[in-house]
Length: 467
Image 1 (cartoon, rainbow, N blue to C red):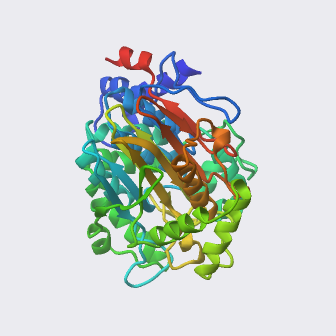
Image 2 (image 1 turned 90 degrees about the vertical axis):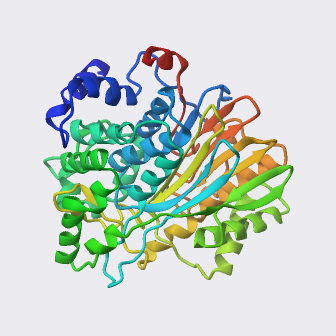
Image 3 (image 1 turned 30 degrees about the vertical axis):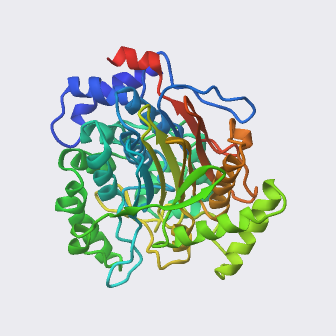
């Protein structure tokens, strides 16, 4: 199977947008998947995870985690890794993240400064069902400021998966099963994820999205302008207009990333960095932090009580079952950390793919699922100039609560060491929390114990082969 996939990758030049050589694919794209005899390690909820002196990543979807870990083996930074995971997730986990999505990231650079990158989706000036996306621009900005690898290197893994195909993971399969009605209403989604009899393709089935591969090829060659300007942007505008939307070329070209210092709190000798008050996510996270800290007990009961208090204070009574969100993080050997949370404002966003692009458009934040952005929770905790925790909460208030709870446990001297140490309300149907837990010498990646994600370390043997 490994040799078969490698052969497919080496055949990729005829399928990618632009002019690419077989040597490039062999040296860069195939390597980005970690296609070596020594695969990155994964962790289960009932074992004590081995701490490693290597860069680590964690994601809700295993193929994306492997892509991020492989970037770290190539001397990439934490930001290189999360950028590679974003573009891979846009292909392998499109129910929760895509080129049409938005979100929040926290980045700790090697000087110890933590910056918040705000690229949440926004409603077009003239309204409509679709959001103006910020993700592609934001990861281009972050990677330019904090990356070490060529831009092409972080886009290529997702491009290759879209063009040559990928197996449906258990993580994606769970989201597909819950979104069957959405998938059936969009021709592109149906063609990719339904079989000839109109049933969902089984876990492990190979699927691909050639149109998305071509769009990613434009982004690889032309940076963010390959998405926000030119043919891709024109197709998005035309599709939006034809479907009663209002996303314009001018709005796409004007997309920028807001940057600023993260909010900080001090507790238990740690400095906690969280989203600022500029966003609903920052306000809700701060409220939940206060309510959790005041709970007399611990565990799931305490989390559930804190969630109820915070939701009541904001007047939130009902939420969609799937908010179409995800979170992923990376820490590299130099101490750079990146924690990112992304949303499409509902499962598969608007449920519509812009014709000719493969891009699933996020729903406008004005729809009920637009509340998803208030529950995006990237967190970074530091102590003695080291990263102690990089956590992500996504998928709703349960995700925020689980991430904050892990952080509070760290302030009490109980840094999580295995997946089973992570807690939530138990009410969320999908992935809610991912954590990277560190001491002064090593880090442990922990994916949600109730889901199918992957915590992965960059493999030292693979690194030596690539060098």
